[in-house]
Each structure stands twice: as structure tokens, then as C-alpha cells.
Image (cartoon, rainbow, N blue to C red; front, side):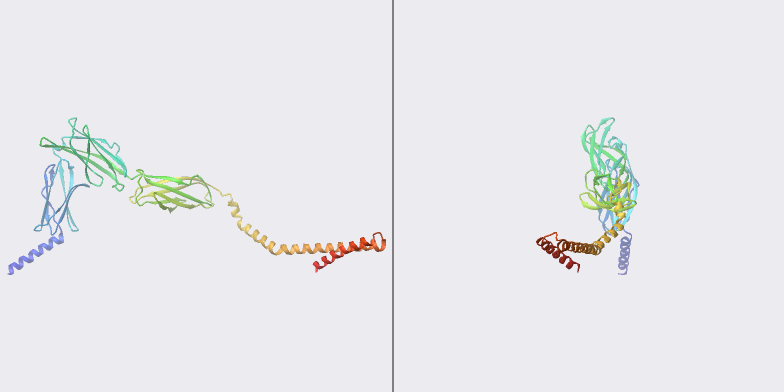
Amino acid sequence: MRNSLVVAVAFLVIAMSYSVFGAGLIINQTEYLKGETITISGTCSEQVQISLLNLDRKIFEESAECLGFRYEASYQTSFSDPSGFWNATAMEGEVEKNKKFRVLPTKESQFYVIIFLSPSEPGQARTSELDILVRVTDAGQDVDNADVFTWTAEGEKIQLEEIGSGNYRLLYNVPVNADLGRWALVITAEKNVEGEMFGGENTSQLTIENAPIAIEVLEPATKTVQAGSELSIKVSANYENGKLLANPIASVQFNGDSFEMDDGGAGNFAYSLPLELEDTGAKKVLVNLEDEFGNENTITINLSVVSSPFAGLLELLPVLVVLIVAGIIFAVFLLPKLRAKESESSLENRRNALEKELKKLQDNYFNKGNIKKEVYNKKKEKIETELVEVRKRLK
């Protein structure tokens, strides 16, 4: 009974140690020739995820069951696999173990010559369509009916299409988020000839660059603008392949300051830039577009900012306000009084003139007798009527 308890405790300790330290990892060799089988094994306490990578190229993935605290998986290499340093990974839960080893070519796996016909330029931009074209030969003769493979920038293995005369092609769109920098484009080939395998391998060193972003200026339509006005800036932007930018941010830079543009959707962006009165002369407005993956482009809008015809008027605005207020005060308060005084003086002059005219009329009738009575009475009535009215208005 005691021995059984000891065994049980020991068994539990071993199980706990496996659980704490995660999967172990053993590979049976440090170097393999193409065509040989790679065996991966180790200790475990639960299911283990196995993967084989050549740099970022995915070669093999498998879930291995944990039986009796051990797991094992195997992969037979082929001539279509790349040679070089590989990495074996065993992951149990969050615990990961890695081992490096080499896969070496054989004479038969290098039998065919693979010639790159395209791409001819090493620089390849994100979002561009990459034309991968190779020719497979054997002693200068075209090799048809071979299986030819490559790996994408994401590490996926993909087969090229045979197009005849030993040529194989793949049209591949470089992802917008592909890793920037050096990219080794590996091509492998294999063919079964009467039960015997032959292959070939070649690498083209490429460089992945930022995706080009096309920016079209919609506004301003003219390059000459006035100081003191609002400058409307509108642009449309997309990748050069016509697709919309991924979560773009657009900004305007002017006089050392940066302003975020409004995203109107469908690749359209706008901003109203206020120009100060002193912003005259040759000016540059920078418009920058950037997506969430760091692809960006900046364009320059060259402007000629001229003085506003109202600029001088605006400088005199305080004086004009004072003059206008003074004019209003004059019109409302002083002008009526002046007009009243002017009217009173005019009435007094008229009264005096009427009184003189009446005296002269009386002198001509009573003293000189040179007018008739009917004429005298008629003129006298007219003068006296007007004189009464004038005297009333003077009161």
C-alpha cells in the first residue's frame, strides 16, 4: 500500500513538472538532406502544436497528441522544399520551445537550373502586382511538366503555372502590409522522371518598399489666393492600384503648423485653411497622406498669396467706426437743431420783409395816392394773412 502511494506521488510530481516546464523538444539530427524525414519528439502534458519554418516560409504544421507524457511528429522533406536553416517549434499552451537545424541540397535536388526572367527590378512596392516568371532547364533543354513552387511575402507556399517551353509563371499582389526590406524570393522545382526525383532551386533577392499613394489636388483650382481669406483644400487619394487607403490620416502643413483634414469618405479629404493678412508672397502648403501600415506620400501645393484690396480699409476700420458714430450723433441730435435755427432765421427775415412791404403799400395809398382802393385792399389782405401765419410760427 505504501509503495503504491509513493508511486502515485512520484507520478503526480512528474506530471506537475511537465505542466510547469511545458513541452520538451528533441529532433533526431542537426542536418538533413532533401528527401529525408525529420522526426520531432519530446515531453508534454497536453496537445502540442508543431511547426517547421525556413525563415518566414511555412513548411509544416501539425497538432501532436500527448500520449504517456510524450509526443512525436515527422515530416518527409522533398525537393520542393527550400534548403538552408530551418526552425522547429513545439508549443504547449503558452510555452514554446525551438530548435534550429539545416536542410542541405543533394546532387539530384540541384539537377535543374532555374532562371529568373521576371522580376528584373529588385525593388517591389507594396500593393504592386509582381510578375514571377522563371525558366527551368536541364543541360540547356526546357523542362516541362515539373512542379514549381515559391513562397509569398506572408510565407505561404504556392505553385507556379506552367505556360510552356519550360516557363512557369505566377502573378502575385504584394500585400499592403508586407514586411519592408529584403525579401528572398525562393523558387524550387521537382519532377519525377521514371520513378527517380530531380529538382532545382534558385533565389532572387528583392526589396519590398512602401506602397505608392497617388494624391490628386481638387482645390484650390487657382494658385493665386488672397491674404485674409479661407483657403479651401480638397484632395483625393488612393493606392496606385486604385484601391482605397487602409484607415488613412490626412494632414495639411502650413507655416510650420499641422492640421488634420476631414475624411469625407471614398478617398476624399478637405480642410479650410485661414490665411492671415500677413501671409503674403510665395507660400507652400504640404498635404500628407498615411495609412495604418506606414505607407505615406506628401505633395506640395505652391501658392502666391496676394494682399487683399480691403486690407488698408481694415486697418482704418477703427477710424471709420468713430466717424460713422459721429455722423449718426450729428444726424440724430445736432442736425435737427441746426435746421430749426436756420428755419427761425428765415421766418424772421420773411416777417421783416412783409412788414416793410405793408408800410410801403400804406404809404403809396394814403400819402401818395397812386394806387386804387380795390388794389390796396387786396394786397393788404394778402400781406396781413401771410404775416399772421409767420408770426404764429415764430412764437
